[in-house]
Image: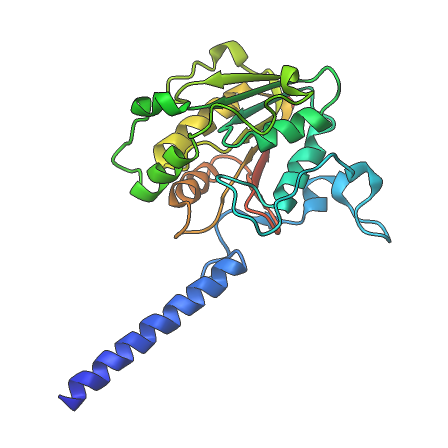
Length: 259
């Protein structure tokens, strides 16, 4: 009996130690045995706009901003991620978002993009939830998150001065026909359903819609336990394209070559 208890305690202790190691590795944005598959780069290596001077980030990164601090927000980006997206919007002329959620990114884009920029965002409306299609490779948790983030038909930008600048599309992204938008957008954010089949679908469409020289960014590259569909789909895509993971964020980015 004593031997059995000893073995059980050893197994429990080993499992706890493994889980602690895994959690520590995820906080450092890496796996237990090494880096995540997509190469991590500093922000200023990704884009020189973010290169700090003696006082930190330069005034070229100044934006209109709404932070969240530690407050929970459905589908929300961190303050650092929202800032990156807002800075990139300052020089974008055509912007598209998969996954409106609360409408915060759309609002920040509209506040910071050039005056005549075109902004389009797509989401599943609450009354369209029956259109959502789960595939066999999609984890239940990712599906549940997608449904909870499709709870809005009014958004942060609703009723604001920038609402007229935003084209709001409603519908399931798998049914979305991207062909009229081929190579039209220079900044695209993929942050819809994190279920594997949707990340694959939205990524394929985003890459087709991205103009040469444009940027595609994905949200929630978090490792093998959280947003698993994102992690799997992007690691697979990285075997074909030179994706980079932006240090200190859960953003992955790809700049489409100029032909």
